[in-house]
Amino acid sequence: MTTTITETYGVDPTPTPLALLLLGRQADPNSERGVECPGDLPPASDPDLVERARAAKAALGDRVFILGHHYQRDEVIEFADVTGDSFKLARDAAARPEAEYIVFCGVHFMAESADILTGDAQQVVLPDLAAGCSMADMATAEQVAECWDVLTDAGIADVTVPVSYMNSSADIKAFTGRHGGTICTSSNARRALEWAYEQGQKVLFLPDQHLGRNTAVRDMGFSLDDCVVYNPHKPNGGLTVEQLRDAKMILWRGHCSVHGRFTLDSVNDVRERVPGVNVLVHPECRHEVVAAADMVGSTEYIIKALDAAEPGSKWAIGTELNLVRRLAKAHPDKEVVFLDRAVCFCSTMNRIDLPHLVWALESLVEGRVPNVIKVDPETEKYAKAALDRMLALP
Ligand code: 13P
Ligand code: SF4
Image 1 (cartoon, rainbow, N blue to C red):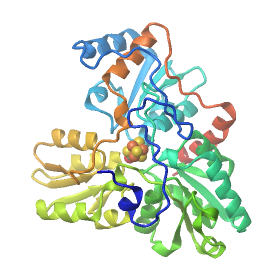
Image 2: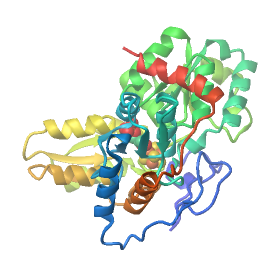
Image 3: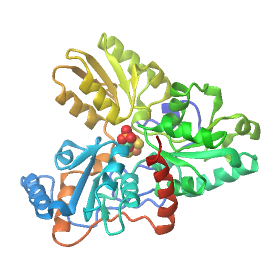
């Protein structure tokens, strides 16, 4: 059965383009990524893949630094020099000036951020260019420029500060930097918003409406009425000038295709199925899910919460499945379940598999640098200004 955006959200009949290229085998001009692997991949059935990855990594030594996001497959995480959420990985990439190659096992926007934060002599490699992010694709540079024109016409652009989630293209980060805004991640969204409200009266939050709403309402005491949703597929975002002028928080109509699928029913069901369970969810989940949860936080926060949990305690986790499976394995003394059995892996994170990693590493050993992610200098300048503001947040 195909679930449409309307069925999932039940709020707005405007179709949102489904930007995922599930098999990653074609180019999508509207996407921040989306081309097929240009080389000959080793077959997934090759019994020597692990050995080949080890040998290539050893041959490269300190010349290569492998970053692994928490949502990556086990077979890839095994070869990561560091693992982390998008905030930690951005910092880790910036702190490795001696590595010639940063192999980013994550998605395209993360590799772009790593390129922006690393030196010119360093090259960032994304093992599969089809590893994009459907949320990042929900805000294009043209749409965001049009939105700013709408805010300008409404007379509020001067008092609005853009805050963009790390999960956005370099173009959106550059827009943010150009207009005096900052980037945030799910670890520091509250601090970023507090900073933004010291600079202006309103925030344009891109592209994840849920992280923006959850942070404003749950963490900062805003009411739901303080927030409006700007729909880039409607004239003037589907908002009146009065609505824009009254709002404190203008949320872009974007969401994560994975976290957006957890529902209030998922929370109610698991509480019935597992009495005494603690529900712990990522802030990319919808507001009603976050409101019904016991704890909310980034992937790094979720990992720390499980580390600190009492033996025998029970946990239902609402985030990507690769991470939840690893947590269940790492904590055999606790009961760790997935919040909803119908939600699955992030299909684009999963694009990076062992054959792609082996192919990327062996290419580097042979002197070819594949799938380089390079942000153009003008975009980089402004995107870096926004990222630097984030890194300087208290
Ligand atoms: P964090 O790694 O910042 O928790 O974000 C989760 C995510 O969806 C990354 O794509
Ligand atoms: Fe994008 Fe969601 Fe996948 Fe993260 S989990 S890469 S936000 S689609």
